[in-house]
Amino acid sequence: MPTPDYRVRRAVGDDVPATLDMKLAAWRETYATQRPASFFAAEAARRKQQIDWWARGLAAGAELWIAEDPAGRIVGCAGAGPVQDDDADAGVPYELQMLYVLASAHGTGLGLRLLDAAIGSKQALLWVLEDNPRARAFYRKHGFAPDGRREPLTGLWDGLHEIRMVRRAR
Image (cartoon, rainbow, N blue to C red):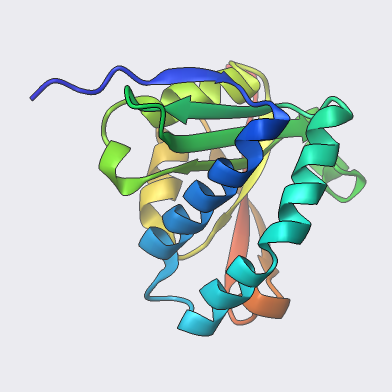
């Protein structure tokens, strides 16, 4: 079966609403067994606030990469930036802050294309839900390894934990 011809490009402000819709759909696909319906409703209720925040970030120079299917529908996104001060101990300069791909595009190589667009082969770290074996396996395949840091989440994510994974020079 042929894989779709996805287009990966840097997002602009007009892409933010559809990207947020895609991100929420990816969360529903990935976290439906770990979060109650109220979690997704609360996130949907913050949509206007999130659109404004993301649009301001893009206008200020933040990089967000999106993937579109042949029909122009956003099916994935990735973003990265400098490591935050509380992660300086990892000894790498970049953080992959997000990478989401809809389940319909899993296994197509799109995740790697987005990872490459966001950070290339740079040394970097990321935080991933401890109970997300698919994502953890993807990141391990691409050079990331858990470094022992584990953090409890709060707020809407309360009860879950993230682990830090780091990719160093090879």
